[in-house]
Amino acid sequence: MYITWRKANITSTPPLQAWVSAEYTYDADATDPDGTVVTYSLGVAPAGITIDGTTGVLSWTPTAGQEGYHEVQVFAVDQDNSVAQQEFVVQVLAENQPPTITSTPVTTVMQGLPYSYQVVATDSEDTELTYSLISSPSNNEYRRH
Ligand SMILES: [Ca+2]
Ligand SMILES: [Ca+2]
Image 1: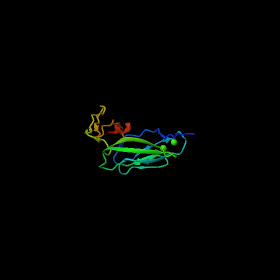
Image 2: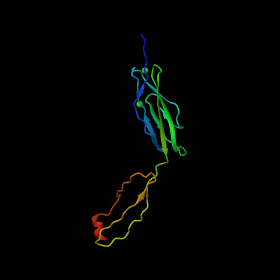
Image 3: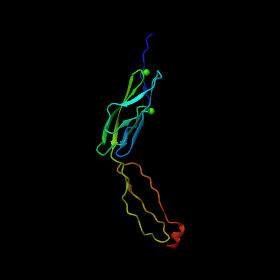
Image 4: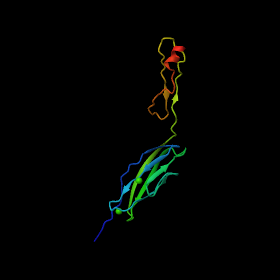
């Protein structure tokens, strides 16, 4: 009887962005339709990336100078030695910087008038910012001043 051994299917989808100095992880998952155990390894990969051969978990903390695009090849090898391959490109972005507040607070307020100050901040990654008060005067303090 002639048996065709089938290679594993890689079913997971990798994240395609990473940041310098931040850990990138990707849990690769593959299953063999023949039911054999799959082990994982890397082909082409940037410096510093590692893979757990049993779980398929990739981990990587890109360093300064690795900004840009990096090709990654993951192999899933089953017990009949069939090799499945997944290739993708991870974009490494510069270290995520905290936003900067660019406005100057209003420090005087007329008695009896509401205080208002429009906070303006910018973020180099252009992500949407949210604002919150860390501490604010209580109503009692307002009355005393
Ligand atoms: Ca197989
Ligand atoms: Ca896995």
